[in-house]
Length: 433
Length: 185
Image (cartoon, rainbow over all chains, first blue to last red; front, side):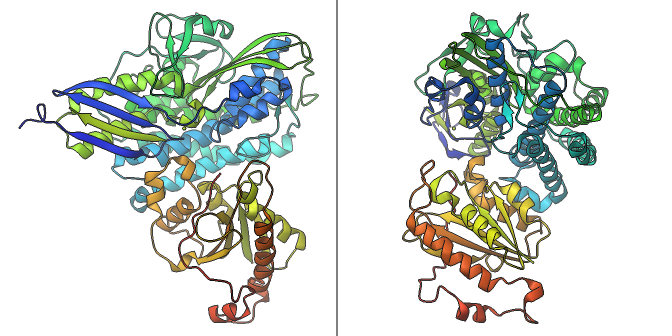
């Protein structure tokens, strides 16, 4: 009996190496994919609801609790939204320090995903622990990189998980030049490790798989995006952050407690490192561009399996950017700009390690939050993950059950899904009817 | 020098028992004990014990006895790769077991690593320690001061395991040898 006419069920109860918990079901009928569902079944976390009634200054610390891997993203998007609502723009050294803090988060998050979560897929190991026995040097590199990212987070944020030093208007305390100085050697080391990371992952075997995604990311005229820019897409969208909801909507689907995002009239889109890179390659420093070229990447990458290389290139960028910021750092006159509340709505978007993170808040004249909306990168990517599986599975139906299942899991991990942020774990089930 | 690492989330009731113990031990300034704290994330934990020859971990656990009971595990004397929790869990389970498994695979496990796991009862936000966990903190604090006086103060040849057992403050308490299950909030 051929594999196309045979009924089979492939089920993985626990897809590992993702942030949070969820599941995936792939249903096959007559040798064709009949349905794909990324199931996120963690209870909704109601952050948007319980932010209502809170003081606007509390929001960065509350939203930081959404994620232990990317708390800075939540702090940045929320502070920018609040500042926009209150008519304040943070510039100069404070703005640079925010970028520096974001560098720390990208380094620790990307190092975690590249080495601990994703590399084992390409090298054929179940986990980083299994991989460590044969690739000890690589795993050590990943751990060292992550540690340096954590050190930067701790220095600026007070601690590496859920930093406590960010406030609307700036920081509670800013570092002196002397305090930043020791990070220079550490970041130079991290830059070397990042370049080595690009070479390491560029040598992996990648499935021949490309799709014509609509990439969506921030774009800034002068810099690779972290906190600021217009929302642009590879299909011509170019809007200020404040118009985000005019173009993107969230839909409820029965199989996910995280809302699915689509671009109105266009459908699924792609956020994350590959979108950022493909829309902002020209804004990367030469060292990162050269590393990308050496790894065989062009200015646009459409193979989601190569997102691991893009993440490595972004590690190079983040280390280089952190060194640049520290090199020109002049402590600001005060640790934060005064931000007086005023009634209004503010929008903020920043580039979390996993992609565009949009926040919108409405506050009253006393600064009490009346409404909140948070759109996380993983919830924006859910439909695209499902679409990848629709396209990927048919060309791999002849694979043995275990290998097909593994390849599906790997395809999900291409997105470094942070299910915790979007609502949390992944169960994978492939059913052939 | 013995490094004591208190693990947990101090804002989640008994999950913070290791952190409470660390702070108490630090306040006592016990000679020969260097006290550190960690949220329990695997790579952070590996960094916290780097370079130490003798390490004591104190963490909360659940499901291996009544609240407040204390489980002792000499990690350096047991096998296992710790790979299973990593394979079958999300990054939310990148905890003590992962750190031990990874360090063992990378041949950088401290020469001696002892885990004390304290059974918790309540893990709610801001719940504070339960009376049972409070009592266990007192017991383990006393125990650590007695049992890990630091290498430089230790009689030549160190103290044998049987001597440790004889001096144990916990004599008479059931000594479970089953693998404790650290709890991550």
